[in-house]
Image 1 (spheres, rainbow, N blue to C red):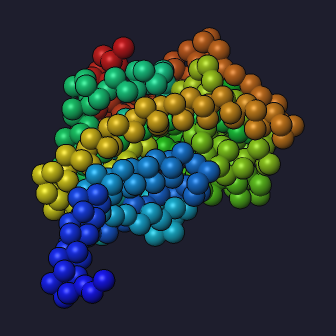
Image 2 (cartoon, helix red, strand yellow):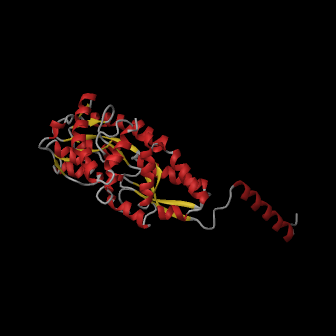
Image 3 (tube, rainbow, N blue to C red):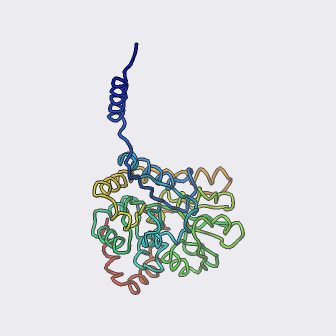
Length: 337
């Protein structure tokens, strides 16, 4: 059968239209956004969070927004990420907010020892006055809060169990934030400060005797290989850190209103994944360290209360006195049941 040029063009056009209905074409203005974090790729839920977010936003924007993810501090050093977002040099990061406590002292509230006692209390901030303050505070300093991430953590140690304040006297420790460090100093410990991606070498070389970090990082950085004891976050812990997925305000403001809505909807939808991942990691720490032959411990209520009393006398008191509106912020935070 002979096909005329008109018939051929008509057939091609019809095929293109059908294909277009089945699979809309990518936007002609595809934009690539960069997401940075310090955690290992694929084995840490914070990396998975970034990848899930990227995939869903790309899908819902029909490819108008795509992402490049830089794990393991491969784009920016951990403490540089917030400033990079604020300046517009970085689009997004999964970022431990208390790392900015030096320049932005109020962010130390997000790793205040014994202030958060459970995941439920932490996530209740979102709809409470303290959460509204935090969102505005971040916005005023160049970042939009996309996904709330509260993560529990524990302590890995080289020589003995750490359960009470007296257990750290004379030890070299890492608390991951200024407020934790003030409490540990009050208990008689000395302090070393470095990001969590340096914890393995620090413990292996004896730079620290004990260090606090998130449950995910206890495993992602293989601390079971260099520790002899671990106290998990399965029951009680004074260590809850806010490690949200953030977007540069420069980037956010440059998106269309529809894209902004998608970013926020996807970010919020992933909080269930985050919470279940954190709970799973808290439990998994015991199995991982136990399998390595380490001693596994859990803090009880009485031990937690001893840390909380010390925290109030040291870290809480310092924050209230030295940070503008510090006592007001503490009051807002403690008002969340």
